[in-house]
Image 1 (cartoon, one colour):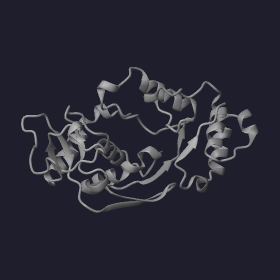
Image 2 (tube, one colour):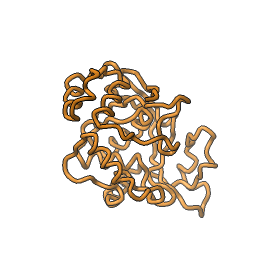
Image 3 (cartoon, helix red, strand yellow):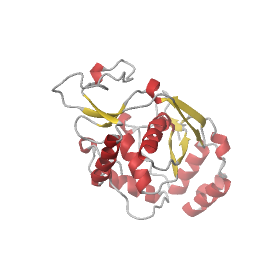
Image 4 (cartoon, helix red, strand yellow):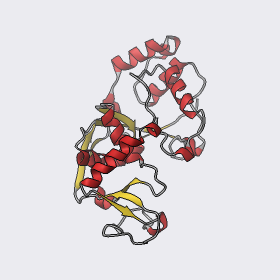
Amino acid sequence: MEDLDATRVVPGAADDILHTLERLGFEWDGEVLCQSARTGAYAAALDDLERLGALFPCSCSRRDLPDEGWYPGTCREGAYHPGRDTAVRFRVPAGEIAFDDLLQGRYAQDVSRAVGDFVVRRRDGYLAYQLAVVVDDAAQGITEVMRGCDLLDNTPRQILLQRALRLRQPSYAHLPLLVEPDGNKLSKSRRSLPVGSEAAPELVHRVLTLLGQSPPPDLVEGTLCDAWRWAIAHWQPQVLHGVAHVPLEPI
C-alpha cells in the first residue's frame, strides 16, 4: 500500500481499495505491506547507494528547473543554493536503458537526456516512489509487474536503481489506460467516478470488453468465478500489443 506521503493519505481509502479488490475476486498471499512501515528498508537502500557514490544532495526547487522538468545536473558538484534544505538525487549515467514490455513491445529511454538525475528522497524527507517500489518489489519477490501505461516511462529509472542495488529485474506489462472523452485518464485527482455498484461479474465483463477480449454476453449471468475462469482461459494479450489508451464508453 503506497502511503509514504502522509500529507496525501485519505483516512479509510486503503480499506476501500482492499474491499473493492476483494469484491472483484482478487486475492493475495500473506499480509498487505504498507510503505509507511518500511522506512528502515528504504533508508538501508539509500545507504547502499550512498556508499556507491550514486547519490548527491540537491538544493534546487521545481522553479529552478527548465519548463520541461529535465534536471540539468546543477548540484552534481555541490549545492547551488547553500543553506537550503536539500533533496537527494540519483546520479544517472549516460546511455540508453531498454527492456521488452510484454504488451507495449520494446521500450528504450536515455534517462540522462529524458529526465536527468532524479529524486530518491524529497526535500521534506519523504522517500520517492521510484526507490520505494524497487525496494518493495525485491523484498516481496515480485517477478512480474502489471500496471498502467502512464508508468511506462518510469520503468527505465527503476531499472537503473535495480542495477545499482543488484536487485532482480522483474518483467513488465503496461496495460492501456482507460481515458475519458477529453483524452485524460481516469484519476481520483480529477475526481473521476469510482468503480460502480454493478454486480462483480458485470464489472469484470465490462472491463474485458474494453480490453478487446470479447467475453460472451451470458458471462454476466454467471458467478464471479465463472467470469475469471473464462478470462484466464481466453486471455489474448496480443490484442493489446502497442495499445496505450482505450476510450471509456458510457454505460
